[in-house]
Length: 478
Ligand SMILES: C[S@@+](CC[C@H](N)C(=O)[O-])C[C@H]1O[C@@H](n2cnc3c(N)ncnc32)[C@H](O)[C@@H]1O
Image (cartoon, rainbow, N blue to C red):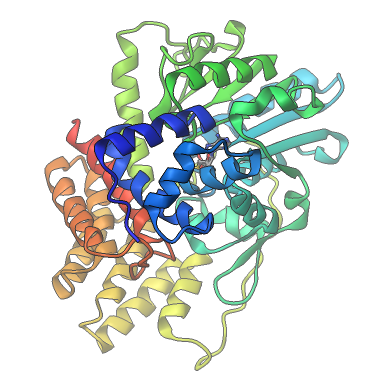
């Protein structure tokens, strides 16, 4: 089934979708919308998309039908400790200050992750709190996590993840907070899992739930990589609702590419090292050189540009780990759990390399990888793995070389082109980055949407394509 919608059919369906869900699809996202409508048509029991479209345009959908439709139209891409600078600001500055201000009061902290997808964000928040509050058992912590996508919420509630969810997180996070299950699946420890409550909520319907205690006096509200999909009318309404839900000194966090003084005029931007976070109160602003509130319009564009660069680089699955603790961070980790690596013969060398790297034994992983390459010099996947380890070791030039070797051996290696493009973004080599990202896109365009490219950790090509396109778009703007 393919969508083949005409221009006017796209316009009509976009109008219906915007009215029903608030989601906004500009013309450059229509190809993606077409594919999503095909998968929605299947879910609604239609074998061809044109009869589905006729039905969609002619009927009023009930609430659960709207939810099903939205689950096909949204992107659930997420990972742990996304944009580490935000978590550093949180654990190093915002939470310690919040704890201090509440220590002699009701010792209650309310957090809301709106658009939480499969749970990596709210669980990262729970981990941030666990790391920062030494006497956490004496506090009442509420972490509410909401999303419209039921399937994503079910995965979130299971709290079992594959390495793809840890692609940009510091090694301590997986070592201290996860137990390894079979294969490459990791389960969050119960004490963190229990801190988060998941609910299904369409952000266009916040007022239906607003009387709930958890949605009032919220101290920190995360809504990242969600608002960019709404029409401006809905955006204004949702941001207004968020403002009401926040406590007087509450913090509002969006992703670095969503920062905008036009969209969030009621908030004050506060500048933390490498991150900008909105505050409901103008007295939350830090006036030192390091943590300046910026209201000078000339400063904002450059700063946002820098953040967008960082955001583009952050989307590199193998970005160097940010392990430097933030200012004032309180660390009280559990002892590191050593994962038992299966015996010789039980698993392939590749699995052993991955196990060693996942557990922080990077040099050992590199040695084993090099030994494996020496035995099979034509295995492009091994060069790819080598580059990932080198990135973790912050040896970026060598990592780039390893990826070039992988691509030389296998010019159709999608993840090789993708990672190389992203590493080159980080090196400021825009032209070359565009070349490799474009190669990845061309290769992806030749694949089916549900094709899983080797080394992509199970990410369907349709979603990988979205990431490549977003990175290309931000590079071409430079
Ligand atoms: C790209 S994910 C972002 C996940 C996480 N916040 C992060 O930044 O890593 C976007 C999420 O927003 C959710 N979403 C989209 N529209 C929504 C709506 N109207 N109401 C609630 N959630 C919505 C999607 O289901 C998806 O899980």
